[in-house]
Length: 396
Image 1 (cartoon, rainbow, N blue to C red):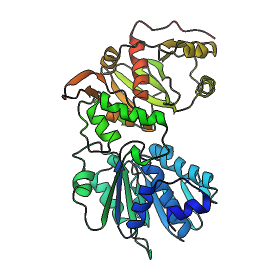
Image 2: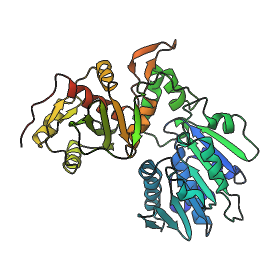
Image 3: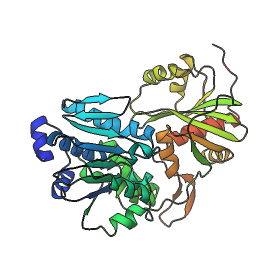
Image 4: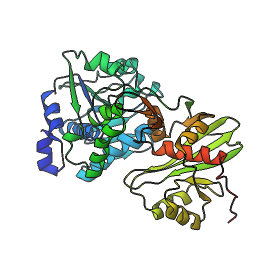
């Protein structure tokens, strides 16, 4: 059965270029699927694995990312969403993170604890956001493809081409072996994207050439001129700190981002609390009430005074943030940032957050405005805490 046949049976939307690619390459061991943002590659691979689970029996699947929090917020949620949407019977084990379809098991394991995978055997492996992995990770995972199968076992890698010097390009894409198939796609192959998102991607040509090349054209870029290098990843935040503040970047079609920042001397622990699209102000208020923010100051995007006022009336100490981007970035750079590993979107943003370059390659004194919602929230919190907007605490 092809994805096209599955469409007719349970009426799901597919992108033809992926259906053709998977059908032509059933005998290949390694499938590299890369390209720009919005190309639908993650959806397509999830659909392909669901199809394999419907057609086969007794197979083991591994879906993996570098960390468990990122895996839970992406593939784990995506595959469950698709199974519910398509009405496919399945069982979910939330404590051990596996899904059963017929008598096939889909295991969701991260590589932050390699012992979980070391002795296991699989028929199909999906490495989502493969740029998070190193070459040794890939080789080790490929060795796990030894579970008995009449068909070809496969490992699938999906990623954005963010670094022209990455092993994915040098070891796989540039010189693919006979058992490797490569597909590059862009947003143009995805007919299901909203017009607003398409315009945002096209606008990147006027914003930053490197971002446009990576995220719109799906071509290899070079991430240079990064803004923040003063950060690392931690398991949790400390309880005893000097100050706790919050930064809030409003959105609707784009995500609303709320981050908590805990300050102790020259260190700032950062924890992502909300990163979600299509939130009304009432939705946001309801979510924030469950976070036990208390009387701590929340610094929010000053271009949304009405939303700030609504949150203030709902009982939060919300104040307009300092808006100077350059000054705000300078203040954030004074701290050693400790970002919790479950702050998935914040980590993804900070890894790519860079200064703009014009068409002549000159570096400008402003960041690229793309996928920067948590970065804005982080800047609001730290810069406003130090600046003139420091509030008087409102006692409720």
